[in-house]
Length: 115
Image 1 (cartoon, rainbow, N blue to C red):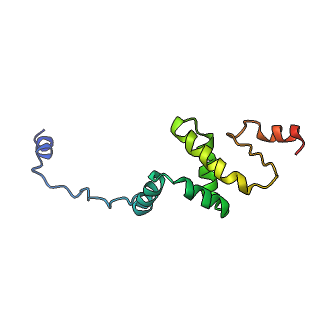
Image 2 (cartoon, rainbow, N blue to C red):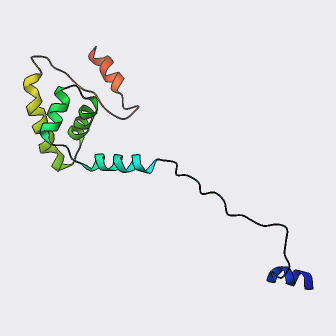
Image 3 (tube, rainbow, N blue to C red):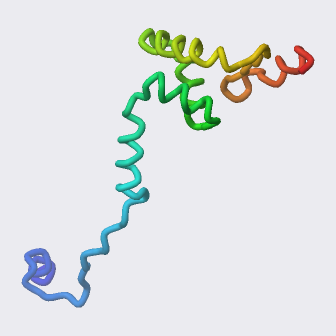
């Protein structure tokens, strides 16, 4: 019983010890994440959207589509302005975009339209 009490009090040295481990590196590069957060927070102007769409920038186009699909009232006026500014460049053609979550029936609608 005396030995167990000595072990509990740390009076007896042990050959076993635990060393401090190596710090695990982050799973994501923090510099990249900071840059990504900074670019995502910045709201683009109508001119930037229109310029990007007309130049064929798919990233800007995808952001504009997301803006048009948004239900937020503050996005509505901005998206309508973007559409109005892009319409003169559309010619006499009609282009329909079908978007939605996976499984929503986009392909089924296109098949029914005969496209």
